[in-house]
Length: 349
Image (cartoon, rainbow, N blue to C red):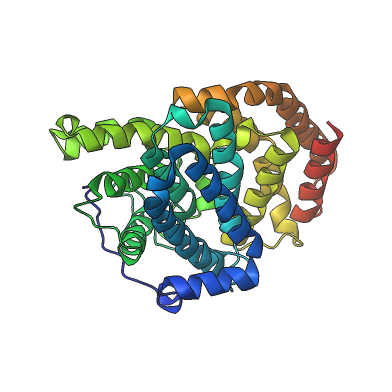
């Protein structure tokens, strides 16, 4: 449904993990805990929605395995291009932690089964590709567009059909597109530093309706599209709900982003040139993201995560101020020193 500027073909990772048996074998070897989690989640959904949902749940489970296995090989723990933040662990913290918390707080009756399954696939598919070249000619980022293209192929491999399962395809396209962050200020052409833009702009999700109005007039008469846009707001809240997690986990996610940001910028944490950028990211950058850029987009997400975000606010201000003060008096030796100081301050409260 969405108009993408480019078509992104399969890469080496996609060709290496071309089917479900390969993905299952890789997860069995590298992350057996993921398979155990999927079995628990399947049992929970079946207990609530009934045995008639089994085939659909198992189809989705296959797509979850494929996407997680590829994510882990492409940018994660069993590949050769490790990203500290955008890897299979980030997918699992959404799929298991945040989505599980949403299920607990809202109850499974809050959304239909198809919505829970679509949100599950969003968790594992929205960040599949992280190395596409930046292109500012369209609001949907190339990483997201490439992830949409690969997600379509994953769905097809798992027995879904773009016509029969149109609502799912549209929902995933919109949710993944809505996870785009628009970088400000605009960096020069080149690689898209996804760790950088997470803290320099907001998500596309709240503005996606305006993009649809411009590019797809009449979409509001399409029930599948309207429901997909509503689900996109929930997905955006899940993606950015680190602000609403216990403070040590919020701080831990910030350090992972910081490490990935430095890696993508070509700076080593043990070198002096990484010191000041890390100070800025873990002080002013965290405050800007938390207080200015992050906004809840859905009622269900706000209810689940906003109370903890409110509890985190003053603590984040204190830690950010402490980082600024410490390295104002004596400049950082390197980025690693800053990361360690931020972590210690965050744990101390």
